[in-house]
Structure formats: structure tokens, C-alpha cells
Image (cartoon, rainbow, N blue to C red):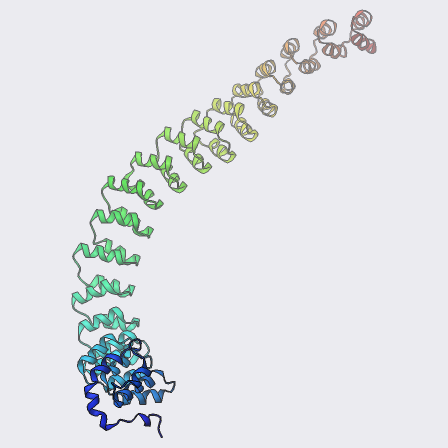
Length: 523
């Protein structure tokens, strides 16, 4: 006995089938609306109706394909067949169900609503709509290249070709279909609806679009930068362009749009609102508006924008404010490099605490006044900066000022080393507050008359002793040895006295024991 023998039709039940047909149509299409066991036990259904229900259950649930197909083949209820064609997972069951249906309305329903493309194609083919059947296959199949070529060859309906060009999963199919389209409205449909970037671009250029609103709509939907650039050539609406410049993700697009906008006030307003650094910079470059540039230079959070603004800025007060107060050392440095006023440059050097900034400012070619350099050398807290300034100074009067007024011994000595004028060296000795600077200066003086003045007037003991060691005036040496108020200077002078009588007088009568001993040792 065959698997379905117990479900064979009972001819006596044919009349009951006709009377209960509507009941099956309502209850056999959705599992959620009926329980199979309840239906099979129902007294309201004929044996034939129950057979149809059982066949559908086997068609849906049997694990054996042959059993499923045999069950579908036994089903005569068109609504059951429609449900199989639209919803069943088994491909062969769906196609067999379609082949058994003759009702055109139901076939059209399947063609429109089946979840599966091959089922929709089979329904269209059964209806004699071969173009629509081919459309379904060409949209959803990319395996049979020969069929693609032959299928498209026979389609003349441009609406179908348009649908294929937009929806097909196969790139070649989309292109072949598009190439057969001549109607401009259909080409426009491709332009607006295709997800294929290349095809969309071709359609936009081929569609003969003239309405600027449509260009704007296409631009808003487009992702391709090249296509967007093409569309921008067709758009003149500055309000739209300003929105693009503010919101578009592509820097290339934003830059292109700004170059096309002519309203400088609108551009400045855009530049103040946008978060895109490239937009701010492009607006600066295009408008050259000093107030806008000044605002960005002072207040923008992006240092790259600030730096670009500084390069376009000519206002000295603003540059000074930035150079003195900006948090970023690179910004301060770049601002200072645009400043010509040497007093401002001096202020920057003396106020900044970043050595890299100070060194850069010091190299500003506008900073060349040696008086200003000497003031920096005196006041700077950085030894390297003080030394650099002294190296730049050639005027010995300014070097003298550094040597006299600096608080730093190394700086004073460095300045003294560059001074050759003995009168200036004498002034350093007279005015410096650092004895070691004076000693270095006295070492450079060889003129006896100057040495004598220093010996007689210097406040520093070691300086006087050094001067004393360099002079040959015997009378002056003897005078110092006999009468000078400084014991150590007298001692140094006694070491140079050659007069024995004077030495004896000092040794015998000087009230200071140290001096007497000094003189005695010389006898």
C-alpha cells in the first residue's frame, strides 16, 4: 500500500466537498487559525476535505521531497496551492503548486506576493507574461550568464528594463538593462533610485535633468564625491550651497562649494558657525575679512585654524595679544614672528616661559636693535638667551651696560670678554656690583694711568690688588704701602716696594703688626 493510499478520494463525498468548500478556504490557509486534529475530527468536513488538509500537512512537514511533491500533486484546493506557492520553503513544492493553478487572479496574487523570486517568475510565465518572468529572474539571479544575455535580449518593455537596472543583484545585468533604456523619465528613475554608484552617475548625466530642485535632491542622496562635484556644477542656489558647505562630510565638496559662493557676509556667518576647520580657513582665504580673521586668531579652539589666521593677520595689537597670552607655544611663536616692533618682541621674550618660543622670537630678523638686545641680556632669566643676545651685540657701550647691570656673574663676564675699550672696562669696574666681573675687567686693562685711577678709586680690594700688580709707578706703590687704609692692599704694595729705608720705617713704626711683619720679611 502506498504512503497516501489511505487518503484516496471517496467519490460519495463529492457533493459534500462542494457544499463545504468555503469552510476549507477559510480554515486551511493559516496554521494559527486552526488545529489540524480538530479539523480532522470535525463532523462538518467531508473525507475529501480532510484528505486535502492532510496532503497540505505532508507537503509542509515531510522530510522526504518525493512525499512532499506527491502530496502537493494531490492537492486540488487552489487556496491551499496558493499558500504553498507563496509561503512554503521547498522550491519544488512551490513550483509544482504554481503549475497546478489555472486561476489568473490567484497566479497574479502569487506573482506579486510570493516570498521567492523563482516562484514569482513561474507564476508570471504561467500567465504568459514572459518579460515579467524574465524580470524576476534577472533581478534576483546572477549565476546564469547566458540566460542574462538572452533574457535581456528579448525584453523591450522599458519599465521592466528600468526595474532590472535598479534592482538586479548582478552588476552586468544592471548595466545591460540600462544600456537598452531610451526614455528619459526611465533614465531619471535609475538616477534617483539605483544603489549602483557607477550606474547612478551615468543616469544623472544622461537624463537631461533641468530642474535645479531635482539636482539638489540627487545631491542629498548621493555618496560619490565625483558625482556630487558634477551635480554642484548644476546648482546655483546659494542657500543650498551654504548648507552643503556646513554639513557635507567631504572636505573636497565643502571646499568646492565655498569657492562658488559669492556672498561674503553669508560665508563669514558660515565660518563662525561651522565646526569644520577647512571651512573656516577657506572662508578666511576667500573673504580676507580682517574682523573674521581676528576672531579666529584670538578665539578658535583649533590651533591649525589659529595658525592659518595668524598668517593672514596684520593687526599688531592682536598679534601681540596672541603672542603674550595664547596657551599654545607654537601659536605664540608664530604670532611673534609676524611682529616688527622690537619693544613688543622684547616683552614677549621676557614674559614667555617656554625656551623654544623665546629662542624662535630671538631669531626674528626684525629684532636687531642692540640696545633692545642688551636690555634682554640684562633681564632674561635664561642663561642661553642672555648669551645669545650678547653674541648679537657688537656695540661695546651696550656690552658695558650688560656687564654693569646684570644680576648674573656669568653674563657680566661674557659681556666683559667682548669689550676692548679700556675706558669702558674702567667704567664697568667702577659701577659693577660683582667684584669678580671687576677682576676680569682689570685683567684686560694695561694702560698704567688707567690702572692707577682704578687702584686709587676702586671699591673692590681684589681689583685694587690686581691693578697694583700691573703698575710700575714706584712713588704710587710706596704711597699705597705707607698710607692706604686697606691692610691687604698695603700688604700687596709692600711686596712690591724696593726702597729699604721705607721698608725699615714701616717695620719699625707702623702701628699694624701684620704690616710690620710684611716689611720685616722684605728686608
